[in-house]
Amino acid sequence: MTRADELQNWGWGVEEQEQFLRMQWRAQTMSYASSYPDAIRMIVRYNGAPVGQIYVLDQGARWVLIDISLLPEYRNQGIGTRLIMDLQHRVTHANAAVRLSVLPMNRALSLYQKLEFVPVHSEGIHQVMEWRASKTK
Image (cartoon, rainbow, N blue to C red; front, side):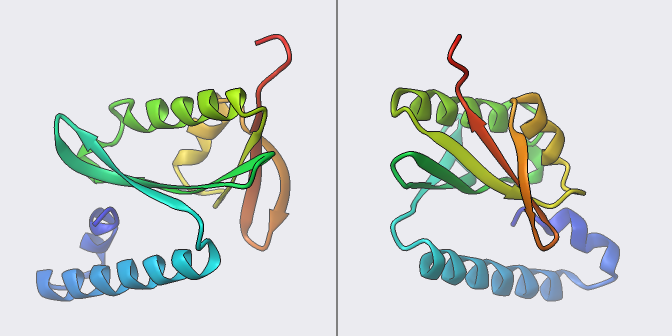
């Protein structure tokens, strides 16, 4: 329920928020399964507790970071950075690139930029970014 912090400002009761979040989660899960049937979903654990998820699709020369999400109380602790750096390490060994799509107002954009993802093009309101290991690394 990574969007719970956003919903608090909507004036909904707890039950309404939980119902909305469940509906959003089901819709996202079905959309990912339909659009990326070969993707791998991994539960992110921190000190043994489930704290988020990461969806990745290996397409050979290009891997797609479909989704990475952490519960609000586990953000800004370096967990997302470590997950992406691990992905970068794996694609380097596979001689591949990582591509992702992000909304320009998403707070993760600065993290992607810090980790050397570069803009490739726009798709609607999303910015497509890519990371490829440099030859000197």
